[in-house]
Amino acid sequence: MSTQFLNTSSLPYCKGCGHDMIAKHSTKAMESLGLSALDVVMITDIGCHGIIDKCLNTHTVHGLHGRSPALGAGISFGIENPDKKVVVFIGDGGATIGLQHIMEAARLNLNMTIVLHNNMLYGMTGGQTSGLTPKGFATTTSYDGNPLSGYDICALAHTAGAAHVSRVLGVGDISEKFVNAFKTDGFSLIEVIEICPSYGVKLNPKRKLTEIVESSGREIGEWTNQRPAYKFTQTQKTNDLLSKVSTIKADFKHNLKEPLSVVLSGSAGEGVQLAAAMLSKAAMRSGLDVTQKGSYPVTVGVGFSTAELNLSPEKINFHGINIPDVAIITSTDGLNHNKKRIGHMQKGVLYIDSSLEVPDTGAEVIKYDFRSLGAKNAALASIVLFAVKSQIINHESIFKTIEEEAAGKKLPVDKIKKTLGI
Image (cartoon, rainbow, N blue to C red; front, side, top):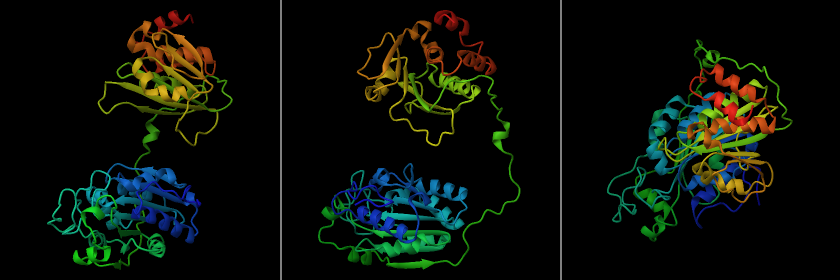
């Protein structure tokens, strides 16, 4: 049965994994404290625990390995509301990588909670030793048992100044332990000791959690520091960086009645992101609200380049795009990157270069030889054609945007106008 925090009871963990219990008992604690799902921001890390994201009804952020505490700290800085809760889920591997982030949050006593899933090894990547693996505990990189002692994360956080630190065994109902952590005014960390059924159990047969903890010299318990939570006290503020950004005046009109999602995609180095920026600014110049997000391979300049835009006559509260209303494709790279979601389009419009094979789609298809204007001009030509065909914004708003962005000398505006017959 789902709860207001979890949308399913079938969590995506191996049978016997303590991560399942942590998720269910931590959210049970949130409910007992009277929190609602939207009172909570959950930040997860890389690792098995992090695949909980899709099961959560809370605000959710997925961080890079070891960086979830830093993300949580940033959110805590921005939320000065005791009725809201910032909770970071992290594994022992991530805690090792991001140790300094945890220590800084504890030192500052930021209003947030770290829930440390300590199964004593890197469970997602093959069962290797982590910085929190106890001495004598066997892993795939220490078959005879870890020869070194792991960090005592609770002692470190307590010494750094955390308001509340606890270490518990992942056995039975530990929701009250989470309650103690979550209701803390300031920084709290709860380390849950568990064992990985895929590696820990197999490599450490017949060992019990209690014995493992005792043999490592660690204690089960709670430690507190009586100190106030962090408060922002700086009185002199820096200048607003946005004040230096020129305002785009709405000197054109639009014909958009409801939000529209647009995916523009081609090859890296062919001006896709530039064209998307021109379309975004032209839409704002037409009085629309706009979001723009770009994606491309880590190695810049190769492969696909995709821009996702939301255009709306009203405020935009979510910028994600699953199935777009409009897809504009100018190259094979762009088509390959977006073929799956184009196939899911049951309506809308697909603008595609005439050199490409049209994929199966329920969208209306408009073909045009964008690349005849040159590969680096195809994306720009495509957004002008979109404006002309859709009539959502006046295509002249795009040309005026190009002119004011001082890009007119570099882009073949006259050639595009002549080719498109405008």
